[in-house]
Image (cartoon, rainbow, N blue to C red):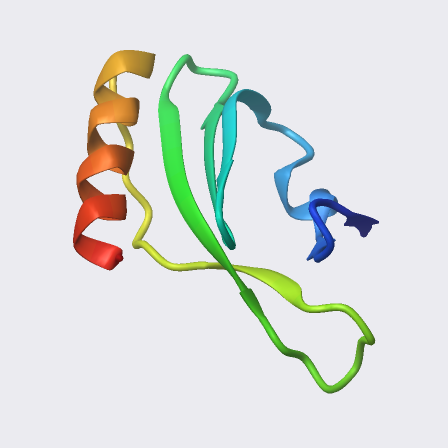
Length: 85
């Protein structure tokens, strides 16, 4: 667990993944991971309160999506972001 943009990030859940893209937009965090097989996994996170911690926790907002390229993962995230906000 670590602090990322004034919220807690549980990095152990992503140990086998490499961050290929990360962008903070207001209180939303867009992240694209790449797994060892070359698949891109785009996620949108928002800050959520958690009674166990003094800081909010980054919580994923979309279902798991597997994309063949970084560009397609960015397009997916952009569309999800537009529909989420």
